[in-house]
Structure formats: structure tokens, C-alpha cells
Length: 78
Ligand SMILES: [Zn+2]
Image (cartoon, rainbow, N blue to C red):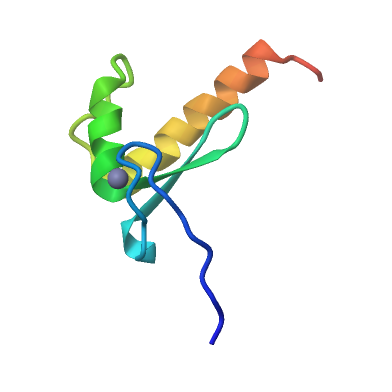
């Protein structure tokens, strides 16, 4: 049997054992794993995104798009 990689939530430090419970947020440096629950709590801590009442699966794409756009603004290499 293949051993699964140990993924630990960046917010609560607990192991994430189910794929359905895993949310990965990409910031400027590296992907950050969160529990679905922890991610929504973390999002509510970030003001100004305006995604508080959206489902996680929808808002994740929004945040990643925002982060990409910010990254492009901060590092205009092209
Ligand atoms: Zn967690």
C-alpha cells in the first residue's frame, strides 16, 4: 500500500487525512494546506475580500485569482 504524504493544516496544526477536507491556498511563496473549516475561518479573518458567504469551492478560485493578479502587479516581470 502506498503511504500517503502527511499534510498538516497551517491553522490548527492537525493532520488532514481526507482529500475532501483539504483546501490548498497558494500565496506568493508556496501552497498552504488548510482544513475546509479552518480555511473558511481564516478567510473570515481576512477582511476586504468580500467572499464571506460564498461556498468554499467557489471562493477558493476567487482568492487564487486575486492572489495571481496581485502577484502580477507586484512583480511586473513581463
Ligand atoms: Zn485545521
